[in-house]
Image 1 (cartoon, helix red, strand yellow):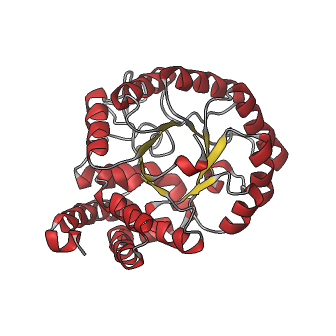
Image 2: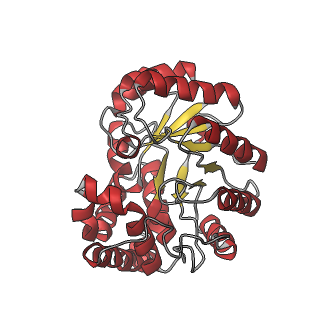
Image 3: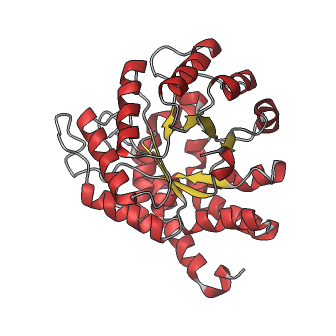
Length: 326
């Protein structure tokens, strides 16, 4: 798989949880029936790929047993119909290696991989880490989880330039903003696909239309139609429809503005926001958040519920013939 092979919507999904998953001593917390149903629904409704076990997927709070159960269920359900990038981030390199070994054995098409999460890495550490992953797993494509806040690493252009040659299996980055996009593309010779979220994919397309061929979306678990529609509009070069859909997606997400604008708040409540809005939208039953991220003040819960309600309304709006054709 190469950077240019990534096209369409890559849905980021929660790891559906059993009703008791918020209990500290809970075992077997993956709701397997809901996992199978969600994945099948997303494929039916236009998702071109899956990204699992990032923040929304609660990679950091799953037990090893639940991690393996979920990866196995996903890979068997997808059955290679669409690409699956399975997260394998952990506290240290040894556990990452064990997870990557399992992910590859189960038949995932690639991995979403962040940096180990204890001491912040220097650029030399980060480059060495991804280089060693590439050497150990030469047939497993890597999507770098480029979340500067979560991993306390800025992912500078120097990093991308170095791993483009020293870590040849790195083919993509899960990006959240367009800062340094063109500099990073130049530094890597466009060998790495900097994939934006649905909310700003139209902005990426303005800067680099030829390379903006895919987007990721946690919102896809609320129902993927708006996300599929906007990447389809981008791919067809329909700027007017892209703007229209960007505005409607922004309207649906507007209740979350105060949360998204405060890095400290968003960092503490990311999972809770996602699971709450997903549950309200009704496309997926995500279940409770796993501890310790199962505390959620009402002042943040209420706008998350409103976001889910608006997304449900947006899906209905886009299914109306006059809007669908617009």
